[in-house]
Length: 117
Image (cartoon, rainbow, N blue to C red; front, side, top):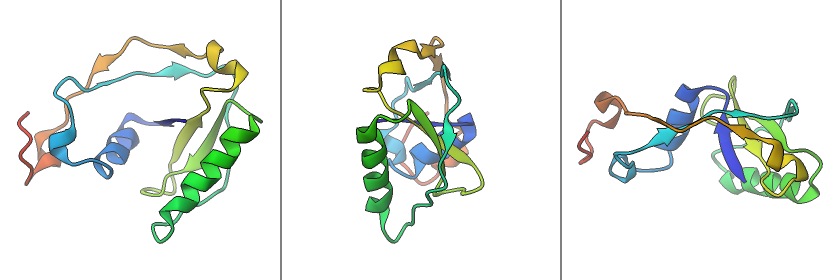
């Protein structure tokens, strides 16, 4: 499963809630992708009380192979969407990726960490 976001700022927040600042590599990059079919919107709302519920939902969707990608609400900012992309779906080979670009985190986001930027 590939996790993506509809905005670079949301992708940044999604990363920061899952790793400590000192785990972010100095050569962190991002890319954009052109997905050949518009992802369907799924109204599944995960909860912080049952974080495994989102994993179970994603695994079930991926195993069904019904679509290449879906929009799902972000748990962090439910009004915004993340995109789940299924790399075992037949259409995955048609995804076009842009060249990776360097991304530097604003040091103010990493206050109180031992990360050196």
